Structure formats: C-alpha cells, structure tokens
Length: 65
Image 1 (tube, helix red, strand yellow):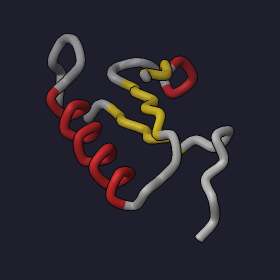
Image 2: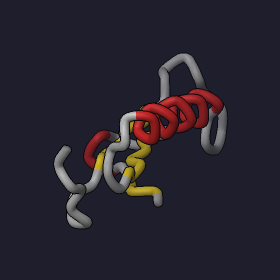
Image 3: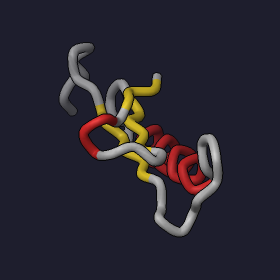
Image 4: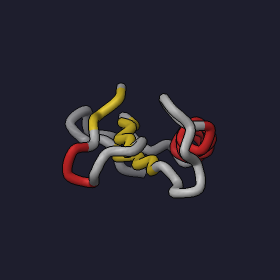
C-alpha cells in the first residue's frame, strides 16, 4: 500500500441543488458533506478538503476546511 504524501489532498465537491432554494448552507450541501466525509474516511483518502458551491457560480466556489 502506498504511503500517503502530506502534499496530496482529496477534493470533495458539494453543489447546491436547483430544487433547494434555502438561504445559507443548504440541507442538501450538509447531506453531501456528511456522505463524502464518511466515504473518504472509509476509503482512507488523504487530507480531505471540501469545495462548496452553495449558490455561487462554478468559477467562484470557496474552499472550506
């Protein structure tokens, strides 16, 4: 098994559904974060980082640590 490099990250992308018009971070985003975090942990992906598009264009999403 390959040793994880500290410079490697796993990008986890969450996107707001068109059907979810809630203000603030949506339930859809929170559910996606939970699912992705669990999957990354179970599969031992290195250094997970969340990128969230909660109503912004794809060109202006922000990294959330």
